[in-house]
Length: 410
Image (cartoon, rainbow, N blue to C red; front, side, top):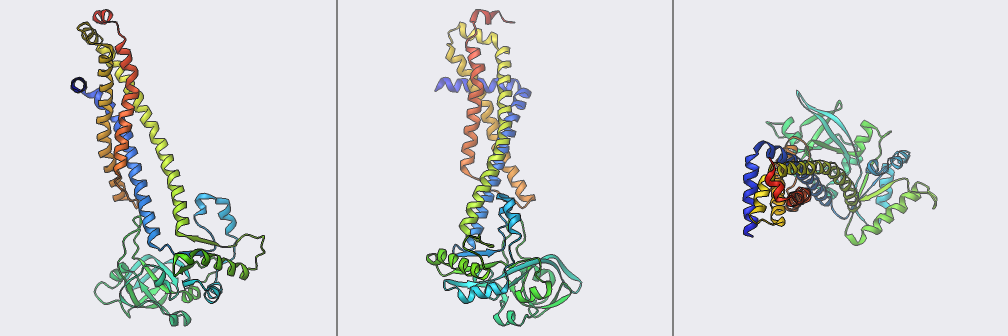
């Protein structure tokens, strides 16, 4: 152990004696480890965030939609084919409500972005969501004041809305927004409720929205090119799978599909989204790490070259050490430890800069990040292995030097 510490001290002195060369060599390792840590932190942060948000939607909620938008990432041709599926309508919703026995709540959703005005004040790109009276029982939309949409609002196509927290503050900074009027796409709507403030999702503000009756939405904006999505909530997980099959059979009958024909709609649940996200995140993670690993190999080759130069420069020193009794393994250990010291210092600096880079990316973009202890351990192990692997050849070359020839070297 004492010999290792002595070799480590000699390595530090050797590195300090060649500051510029050591700094440039360490920089290669720093960039590689920093990239790995930043990629792992961002991907791990996105993974944790997405799973948390999907889980928060409820494990006993599934959604029926015209197309599966996630297939853009997994099977683009199938996604294009699904665009020919018939639209889901309010008649489909009513059929599900009447015929399903295992659904606790059944909602409908359709949305578009519009500008919302209150006099001279306005908010751009507001998510105008057409919903039914059951949306609050399926999603998480607690109220800070007022009320939610009701069944009579839907039936009478009333021009009312429930708005998000930031919309209320932007349009009515000095007054109570309840029973005030806002203008959406040239039409006046009365504010009947304000939702509590919600956290951002991947940097996207979740408080810029307005719920209006789905019937009003269809009346004012039409649905020629848009389809409803139908979220369904079951009372328990025991009825979750049977409820999906029940909904599938009802819609297949309504759409007059033959037994041999595929569904012309999609049913997605949280576990399917999680499974798909894991597949996508693994692909992203693998691709990015593959690219980053190239820089790590390049850094290792540079370290090997630097250590070979160090062996050449210190040939006479090696001869003197051998002449006074140093063994081959002592010489080899010295240069291996120097190589490992280089990469470990670079690894430690790279870890710190990697987390800093991930933090800056998260601060200036929608991407979240997460500090994972395992990534720190893996980064240090990688740095150690790179130093060991690329330091072995120069160390063996130094150990094989003939002491007499080394002493003659100028």
